[in-house]
Length: 198
Ligand code: NI
Image (cartoon, rainbow, N blue to C red; front, top):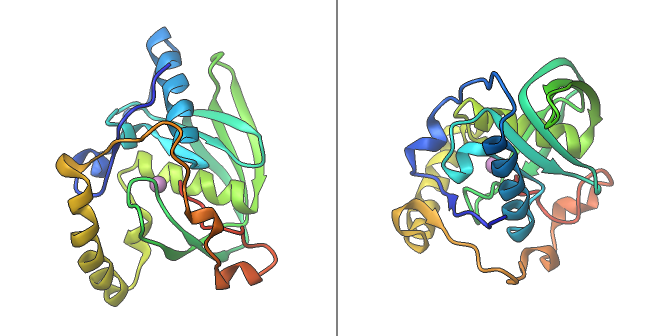
């Protein structure tokens, strides 16, 4: 297994659509193992293949110690709407509110090639919707208002200089300081104590 480099905003692969996978191969299993390792190293809760420079239609996630691999995922039911703040491992230091369905049923193939249907709510449901967007070349900043997007673009211009070639190299063992940052939004009982980075 290996910790992979994360592609950040500006790398064109983040805007590409992924292709459905006809089979679960050894190569895919190896990619998924590396994606889990990368996601944990980055202290994220979700990671999609384009974020590590790949075109496979797959993402991994782990919300509340429930690791899931979703190959060719599709949302077949959605219910409710909740607005909450999101972040993204591919857009460090940028956060914004996004409306997402609060309950979804997602159908996907797992690593054994079996079809699964999972019902997820709240943060796990939000994570699936965010990752599924990645597989279609969509990012959470696309939901921002024009004004907020302009502000974000200016902030990102400075932030992006930390990532030459749009590559974010993870340092193994480095801890993230964000978890201890106090957040006003956390006052809402359903909100996580830190922004989920997906
Ligand atoms: Ni993301």
